[in-house]
Amino acid sequence: MFILRRIALGATLFLAACSTGPRVIPEANRPAPAEKPVERPPVRPIQPGLPQDVERHRIALLVPLTGANAGVGKSLQNATQLAVLDTRSDALRITSYDTSGPGGAAAAATQAIADGNRLILGPLLAEDARAVAPIARRARVPVLSFSNDVTAAGGGTFLLGYSPVQSIERVVDYAKASGITDFAGLMPTGVYGERAATVFLRAVEGAGGKVLALETFDGRPGSMSGAIAKLGRSPYQAILIAGSAESAVLAAPIIRRTGGKTARLLGPDLWNTDSGIGSKAVLAGAWFASVPDNYYRQYATKYRARFGNAPYRLSTLGYDAVLLTVRIARDWRPGDEFPASRLTDRDGFSGLDGAFRFGRDGVAERALEVQEVKGGTTVTVSPAPANFNGNQ
Image (cartoon, rainbow, N blue to C red):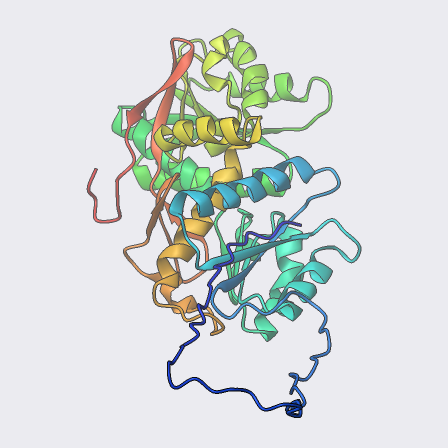
């Protein structure tokens, strides 16, 4: 746990006033004046929880600081610290709570609320967000979760995570605008794959294109190659590989050998979590949609200089959560409830990951760009709008 503190030190100067007058000869054996008893302030009992802090906003950061996801949690924690330093804000006091500790996220949220925090940043995982939601809702404390699972949103829980739905729609729209009409889809099995497939079908239909074939794969040997072989029976122009960048790297050579020699490879924002995706030669020419990377590179350099290692890509969510809070804090009196209605401002907010705003469903809508893997790096082929008024 860390507490970002800035204690203002004040000093009071006591001035002793001196007066002059006639000289007085002291009397012999003059009795000493009686001493008045000194009144001492009553001793206040020590209360549990954090010390009182009436001048700053109390904000809880709920992330895994132990266990399998501790690296991501620590990176998010560092990002919030960096944001406070960069904004030079003395209005926030952020306290970290470990969602992987005893009692899990529910216990962390209960303690955070007992400590007087009026806003929760985190947790990271959807199941943790669902566990925290009813606890926070009873206390009228909003939750800004880093999850991207839309089923965890609503009822005072807002999701900052990158939605695969939006990135699939964005890259499909760009492909259609570039002249592609015939699509194929390669989806991982599971809930994510099912949702991605539904979004893909709707996005292609909405753009005026056609999905000629759609197949799924899992982790079993031969599953991916078998699915791609089936796709090869249709003469598609582009194929969406909805899994991670690693799965795309495995799929690309097989696609080139089995009917998709000239097909354009398309991907979701998941690809951007791989910092080395630009160096994957087998993905040359591929398009994927994601949040803008221009500010991220500057942030990563500053992060590395301060903490001695590279940040996780999604740690910018922690940084941007602080930027959002600092902006709203201008009209938020310490100790009062967080003005949750401000979160749904239609103009939205800006951060390292570009413009974003929350819909009525609590899911962050993001302004996305399309990048192409090219020449050992990635280049932006369709910039993200700077805001939600359609301006670049």
